[in-house]
Amino acid sequence: MYNISGVNSINSYKGIYNTPQTGGVRKSDGIQSPVASKFVFTHSTNTTQTPKLSFGAVYNAAPAVRTVLSGKEEQDKYNTISAMVDKKVKKDLHELLKTGKLLDTSSNDKTTTLDNIYKIATQKRIAGLNTKTIVEDVISTIKNPFNITQKFGDIPVNLQNEIINEEKRQGKNISSLDLDVKSSTCPAASIEFNLAHKMPAEFARMAEGLTSEKMSVEKKINVNELSQGLMDTIWMLNEFGTPHKLDNWNTLRVTLQPDRNAIIRARVQNTYRDPGERSVLDVLMQSTFMNVGAQNTYDSLIDKRIPKYNEDDSGLIDIEKNFAEELATGKGKVCVTYQRIDDNGRLVGYECEPYETLDHIQKTLNAGDNVIIGYTYCDMNNNVIGGHEITIIGIETDKKGKKYFICNDTDDGIYGAIKYPVDEMLPRIHHAGIPKSVLVDNVEFVEGWKELLQIYKDTRVQQEVQNSLQNTRLTVLNQ
Image: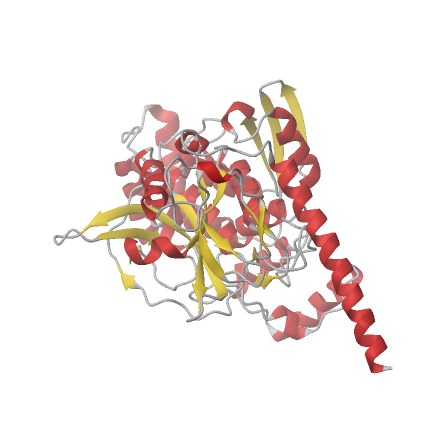
């Protein structure tokens, strides 16, 4: 979820529309400054959940590619995997074959889901992780991505002193209270869900890499597929400390890896996982996406990061999440901010009409993609008191014509889709990752993320100066 912070939130585009909007920017009004509101979204679990309705429909990841094993090699791989898993997981494995997910080739290197699960089953895993458990978790998660959760597991008392001492060796003075984590990983868990739901072969490939002795995944990125050009993309990779290499003017190789403490969390979950807690895969994938977005400063043991663009040490801001999502999927997304929040953290308007927001979401879904959104909670005076990040996977219309967003929430304890009335959710959407192709006809983009992040940094400096002056005044008054 989100925590309110005293740092400016910014739009990843300048909303210029030809039609008037309530609280939006009309074309005749010129371009709104990107620094429109002193407000930033980060993620926690301190806000009361909105009531949800259980919804049983499961939306399959992608159209079937192949549903029949081809040749002796694929049959041998299938038999090897089937022989090492439990009876229920064997059924799930067969179901993946029937639906086309097992032979899906959505991975970055075009290997199949089957290829990558077989690699997990037959090659050495990092010490402290159980190969059979990992294989079964990959199969079960792809079969039902709604099993993915962001709920941290507790660290047993007999291990806490050892972990606290490890944190002290890293220069962090913590106590056992810091290990009782509520979870700020909803953006990372949403990215993980997206992979399992829409790109099963890539989910399996990432699972293989992150549980291998390398504990990392290399991805080949087509620069033309991203929302920014080559120079801005390289600038972002440098700014975020993401290892990369330029193959040619169109192709980048990036290395995604979790923080150094992720393996400790993963080993704890490997042995002590309770029902409803994160799996080993959840730990390593969410730690990776959090670490990528947090400029390699995330710590899986305490769920904190060193803030670079604001003052909050938990969660990710919208642009950080968007950066991690682009690298994870290889698909370009623009982080669109829909709500307008004033300097006091109060919702005062919108950047476009509700039908336009819905159109962005509908077109993205029509193109076969999900939409990760951040939505807000407001009090009776429209003061934003928190928020959360979920994934929209479809839109349903009931017999009376009422529309519902079909969603996944990694923090609700429901292992299936849920639904929200569209007319109630639309005004609550703060931001969403939307393909640039959906937006080109009705928005004007800023030149790049470099400009946006510089604004974040400049604003943080201004905030620190203001806080320093305020503290000085208080000191003088108290003397």
